Length: 284
Image (tube, rainbow, N blue to C red; front, side, top):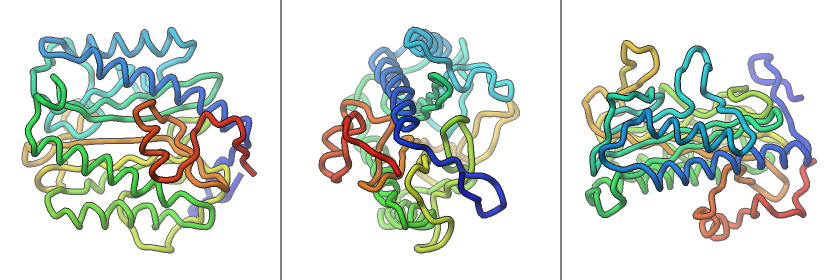
């Protein structure tokens, strides 16, 4: 265990535990792929939630979100102006062209995986050029943050990489009220991971640390408002939002993306990251 900035304990994992987290991450990855494949106009977000829960439980895992501080869904489903924590509902029916963010967590053998994607209902062709640019910007910001996850770097390097990239585009708001977190034997652990920061500031990254990196980008102002349901967060100006997330381990060889999906393999190779299913991975 590592002592955190506020006296809290930061969990460091060994090689075997990292492998267990990858197993949980594969469940999450498969569920997100399934939800994106099945999401279509006329479907309710509650139907998507039932599909996701079945996928998670069929893999021998348990949904991390269901019952978490009273949350009623197995996934968070946030539509258009909803930024994060959207509650699945039978009366929330999808339409072609909706910008849909899905956040999924699973527990397998006591270890957590947590990941999120954003896509357009009906496929990329159903969205606008503005939609595609927005989603690409958010996903790229996530990868910029992940690329800083080497031993010896600091949390501020992750936040700075995300913030400076978003600022360079000039078209998006970088939500500051919510961010990433440590993950492992619990879903939300220390440290909190800001999506903004200063280089060489904050906790030093060490092998075995596992963090969820998750920028949230709005198309207008970055201001957000929580709804009265106690969960759903929306953009103040009603503009669409995007949210991407991966759970990632710090290793001597660089970031190990524990929730990587098959479609991410090209990106992992381009960035020089190891395949998370490589049997030669060692931590510590």
